[in-house]
Image (cartoon, rainbow, N blue to C red):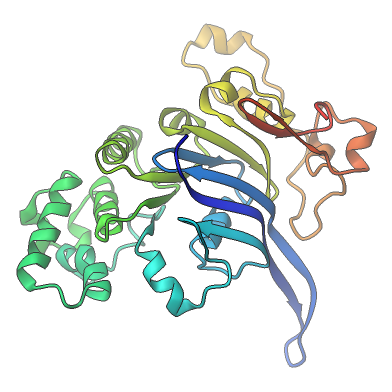
Length: 325
């Protein structure tokens, strides 16, 4: 068994809803993440998938403690970081880094690539000699498939795929154990997506990295994942190994997501049924009682509206659905 690098238990991130200008008061809360639990093993890739607004990115920010955690516990490398102060989190963050979705907005347009990649080194290793600093930046550029001569260019001189490589190089500067990829390829062309995904997989193999991979693209997730967690309205409804999830999805929401993925063969695509999810996503401010998916579920039972489904575990993972409890 691999060592557990990250353990998240009953994580909740609620944002207050405030009313009033001169005299404000809290009238409710947005339950962006509401009772999330999962473990991430050293060297694996766990993907979080789901519709926009289901809480994937908020989960990533909570793991990095970039947003306040309402309840729950986050344990990284055996250390409970939930209550750590900003100064205490500073050394922990050297071991957990993020690759952002937007390769255009995540890089400072006024900084040269050398300074962008080297900024983490200047912040966390200010005593490092200039020669070692320059050599490290050069090695990082080479590691992500860019020429060292590009170090003196500005971000606007690069393509989207190259900018994302720069973002990856910056994230790797401090040799982290955990890399959180928040929709890291969704803004890129399909052919460039494949190149960046292959780069991430090569880096994982060579450096022993662990990935928390966030995406809404199931074809990408199928290629990179060890395990997959399907999220809906701030909760995980199914978590399984990649092969088992695609071969035997159990939760109705998971089935609908997989059925929505187009098949390249037009004859098969024309013949297969594609059941659509009923209605719109409910508000995370006032989520439905019981199973949160029941107002849109084609297999909903009477009990689904009355009580929260229990978690049913098996050898491949677990599912939260009354159909299996």
